[in-house]
Length: 130
Image (cartoon, rainbow, N blue to C red; front, side):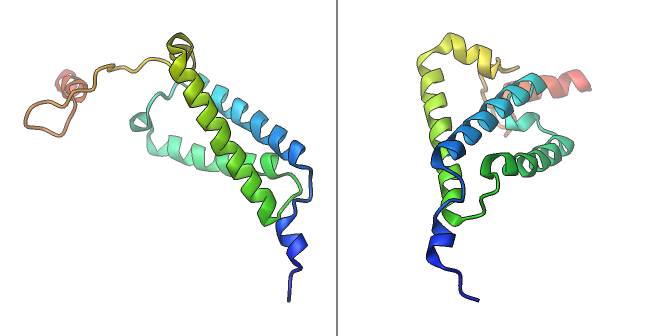
């Protein structure tokens, strides 16, 4: 079965709709993950990872819509990367807003304890648990 190139590369929905969908999902996920309170990847437990994987599969259709073309997927992925790049650069130049969006770390100065692979905060937490 031969697939015509125009069906493979040309998105079935407009590029503007694809960009709007991608931006809306990005903002929703950013707010949702912020409200969930997870600040760092190290704070995720296996259940959180499963939720993230299922969540990504769930919102995939919201981004791509009825479009299954290669071009549409590339546009959606590129839009996500660009949106994230812009947000990171904007937050970097606005530290006050960055604290609101990203939250503050439990251990703002991650310093490795001498002679260990654990950070000072991890070592202190382990001492508290014992």
